[in-house]
Image (cartoon, rainbow, N blue to C red; front, side, top):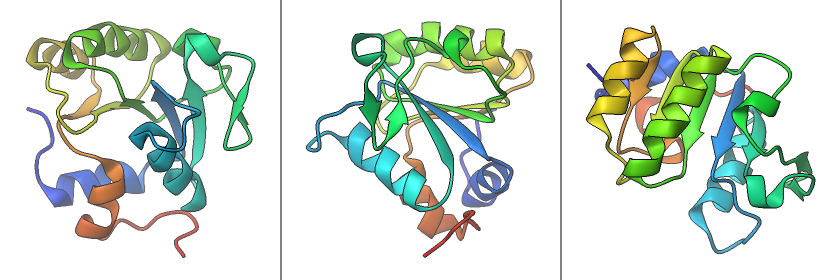
Length: 144
């Protein structure tokens, strides 16, 4: 079952060091841009993933085209894609050995969540870590 309670989300986030943010945006008016900035400000290492922006930077972080392009381990894959597209992202997260997937507000894909859980990944759907951090009392790496 996906994690739905704040205690579970706190436990997940407290164990995260590296986040791959799929659907990263370089447009300041987009939620993906603001959330990425907040996660970086809080001290997480965030890797932006967007094939259309690969080779550029967002919040001074180099953008990669896909999860497979990330050299090191990924604790959490945050998905800023629609529910249908989230399925393929979850499959990529499983393939790279990510520990968890987090589907943003409004993103629910029960089939993809079941595949992730069957592969041993923790799953959150329809929430934003930027909201969950203060709500659940997460101890972020560089909390300000």
